[in-house]
Image 1: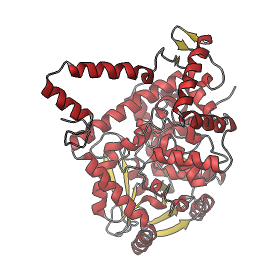
Image 2: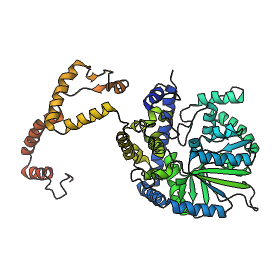
Image 3: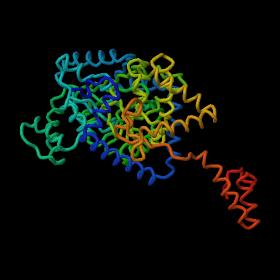
Image 4: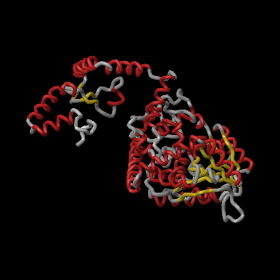
Length: 504
């Protein structure tokens, strides 16, 4: 029996998800709540599209001058006493992290939520040298106990309900815990406080890095990141190289867009700005601070007119909540660290590995909901088309699909051929139509008809009905008052002085 971890294609993984009733209900419930929260929060804020455009312009400017702002950030951070490292590959980022842990003779690392460390599989690497890595975000802690990867960028355990969580935590507690959120959270809080006090190193991601001061900013709702950055004596921050913004003034825009887009909050419960290690006058904080700036394929997008805007992403997860595909199959069906529309583009784009990820771009209806949801207007639906084209150009396309598209182009290029095919279709469908629909699960219809019914062709198409409709319209106009008829004809013919668009 195949599992999400052994299924080789996105279709196989999606089929497993569709047959998982717990997963589908949990994902649907949470994404609808997040989507409605975003809708309400953006409407209450007002001028939302103006703020989206401002956010887009900040990100476009920053990525266009990324080398300048990265150098500014690194220089300022070093002046603040931070050790700044650059890692071109995932292997380099892992090596730097392990070297710091070994130099400090670390036994345990407490981590706040970080998709970059997931991207690097850093927990496994730390454990390979005998260092315990403990996730302290509640959702991350849950999936760590389950031995799984995040299913959502901001809510990693979105695919689990409280009963499943209670089972996991009961195993960890050695006693049965009631499926009550306050009881479950209380157990985790008590457990993790011990880990905070014992940890040698605190490890974080980075929501935004402020170039003008060399500061890093963390958004969170639980307070665990503040514990991670204040209790252990050594802190390591891993940040994607694109997380830079020029100034604190720009952070105001991002702090408005990200929480509303992610969870519908006006502001996250905690927003921490960290500028260097602990100074003599500080009551807490690490004695030593490292920032590892990770490339790992990001620089491949620079200068690419089709994919450079991918680096604008602020990791809010709004595109996942809006995507009809993600809302049905969850995150693990995408097969990589990042899921949803952003994952379908980011995973193959970062690796330039179309051969391995040649099916992931097909996990989309191309409806554009991801673009409408994105707070910085990344055209993910266009990028998905670019990826599909790249797949074809590199010889990884489906032969049957290529033949089908050529046939489609030939038919649609001629009204006579189109009309002839429709007539043939009406005749042919008589063999398979039952109760007004086609339920045959064969060939290209198999995937669709497993969950839906293909509608049959109508007896008369719109094109065939148009002649009769036009006559009825003209007859109706004749019955009108002459002045009204003249006005209506002018509108229809585009002579109403309003651009011929029929308004008025």
